[in-house]
Length: 315
Image 1 (tube, rainbow, N blue to C red):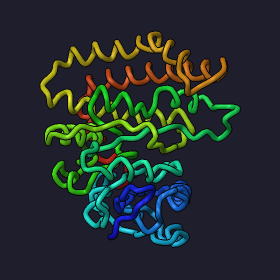
Image 2 (spheres, helix red, strand yellow):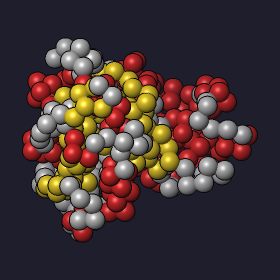
Image 3 (tube, rainbow, N blue to C red):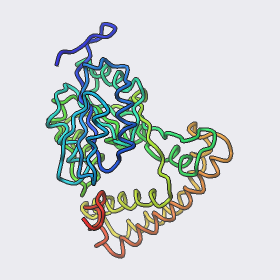
């Protein structure tokens, strides 16, 4: 593919890769946001990799020109993203989730950042909550605005980025290696792979994608079930003490009080009502997390479920 110039900058050809599983309506919104990018349309492609949906996303994809549909039988967003990377034509790979909406300048930010050979080679962007009604945030919108998708912290303090807003040169992706399967926390593990190969992930606040908050507390609990099971398997794999894990669970239960300041000072929520609602969810979810951590410690066999989290139990 021929690179294009915009304002004297030679832009790379970008392959946008979307892992998809049973999210037809959010996929439509995601594709619409990509169709409206402030980036030359002949300088990027969009690849949707379906991971075994009950209904094919082909009719939705057909609404948008220039979108390729691929299939990956191995369960998990990691293998689906790897399939997209394997068939991509772009010099740069950009990963976004099927339930996210890319800000209009998303690709332009990526292209300009990776146009220079001396620039950072792995980029992680900002993920913000898409409000249904900005004048009245739900409890979960208020909570997740403060505590979810803390990309800057993940990147700068922990060395990994969420894989739903990630860009990397294809040559570097090959050196780092693909994403792991669902038995591992793919974002953290891929970040480790990148660091082990000498790469540093750079946080780019202008590289913005929006995602809806979860609709119910049950959905949020399911998210934490997955994270806790991943964490416990990693904890045991490192040979750390079960007593230290229990102490960690107790600390999680008590930590909601310490995070009041984060809610009060956060620029992502405004007004007393949303902050109170955010604290209510924080208190409930921290107690829930602590309880799950203690149950896992008492019954380690619970971690078997981590290998099928993105499929119905019958499968």
